[in-house]
Image (cartoon, rainbow, N blue to C red; front, side):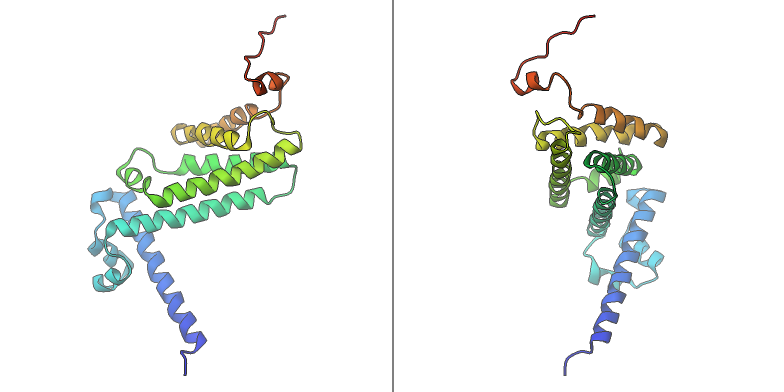
Length: 208
């Protein structure tokens, strides 16, 4: 006889709970006391599980922190997808996604040991590629609707948005985030000079 399904689901739920507790504990310790304070012993103590049990889930502290960051990335991508699913024109949905992305960037740790540790590795590259493709699709829809310039490829425009909105991480307050998004959006709008850009020429100086 196989293992009853209810039992299997219960075990999996327990494992997920233990894993999530370890991720939350490690992130909290790093935020409260710095990266050096995060040890397997302290994570085990905060979660209320044995250190030997913790080692069954993660080989070391870095693995815990990377797993926490991967979970954060998944949640952030889900937030952006939710923003894109709202009603409105393609341009309005794009603006909602850029607003959400800029707020995420603003709330992330920057210039810390934790940030230096987490913002590297294959999981970051994969997430960036997924995010770039997601934005490029939204931009293509908005360009087709005439709400975004079509003289530059959606891929290039997506790169522009991602680079521009990294500035959200250094803004002094959340109130400044919408202004940065508005400035970024202004570079996406169609203009009378689009045909010149398409041909690789500098737009003529305007007079008057």
